[in-house]
Length: 252
Figure 1 (cartoon, rainbow, N blue to C red):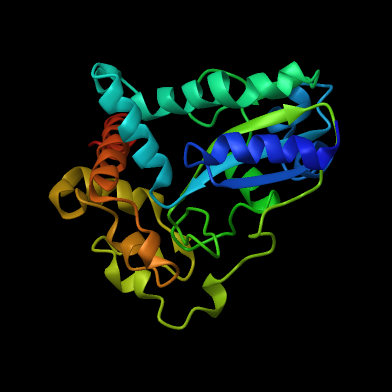
Figure 2 (cartoon, rainbow, N blue to C red):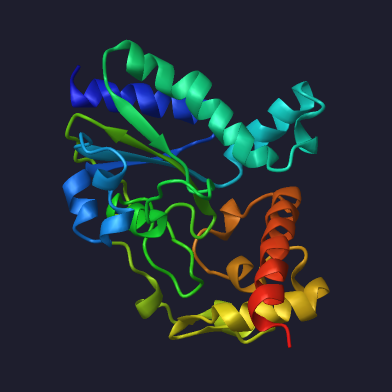
């Protein structure tokens, strides 16, 4: 199968569920940038390229809500959005690729205790997003309102990174409204103060319940901000993880 045909299959299947950011790079390029235990070769020695799958804006959330409406018990799961991601990838996206005789291994960013990739670095190399002061990737079309959902390790070599290859807007940003917007003072020209953010969120959680103030004030693509219910979902999940980290490492 031609590389262009393979990517068209992946893009078409993914886009139907709001997974609208796709980038592909040789595995060797990614492996050269990360520690040995995070390399693609440590997961699949036969992998020659990595196809990164992500979403920008609210389309993926709307697809998830439609699925949840049709499966009333779905939201009772411990990780309903992650489970929906796996459902989409494994029931609709990978089967037509495998049917064409292409070998692939799926890796998710949300699976703990398993072989992992450095998804932030992978997303940058694959042109899904560039670095930002907020500690998340930023995309020229969707701003900070993006997420990485899965990576496909494939035996064929592909080199078609996304539109964000080389994108690095923060050093030239004049307003830098994200810095003044953070009530915890956890965003600066030097980047995101993770510990400062965790302390503030755990000790004064109502301030950030509806969304990250700094992220919402980013001047790039504010029109693609996640829907309010999606923001609450992510903030609640993040706070849960922060509380556990705080309990283990910061509580006096």
